[in-house]
Length: 119
Length: 109
Image (cartoon, rainbow over all chains, first blue to last red; front, side, top):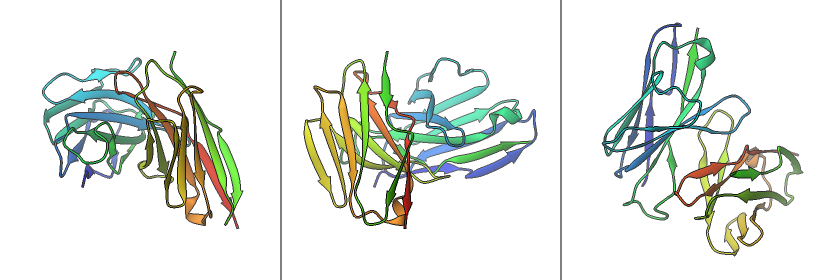
């Protein structure tokens, strides 16, 4: 149980276009979802936290108008990278947390990640 | 401020034992997580400690001392597949995870 999927797993787009990444909790209700970015050989950087039905909370330095997050349901959150530039190329990982999963209520379950390359 | 410290890189030999240390400073504390991350993949959960002491799970064990703000992950009978980054994360009073930079573990034959 507690499976999180991400789609797409990798995407290549041209500079200036927008890309949408989906994060789904498959077998539990995700009350909170997190979006991370990870550059090569670096640790996870939290971008934003979203609770279902409310606006996302962005970390300092993350442009909310550039990285649009929508958490419209308890099983789906989306991250849209608007007007992407080469410096946005990174590994984007979502995680989800729910109160009805086994083990630890506050454990985050990670999706497999999306590798974005902007040319 | 909130901070997690762990070594950047460690090297060990196949079949041996390695201990990865982590110290933390957070606003409040609701437990400490260890995750394993292979290159190009998402992190996978290894352990969670909220009480002092050692939690053993097969070849992996995790220890916590709340009074010292210290944890370690112990890996026994190392296998080549254990080569990965190991991430330490402490949960603060708001139940947010504060992540360490990760320890890259290199296993040599």
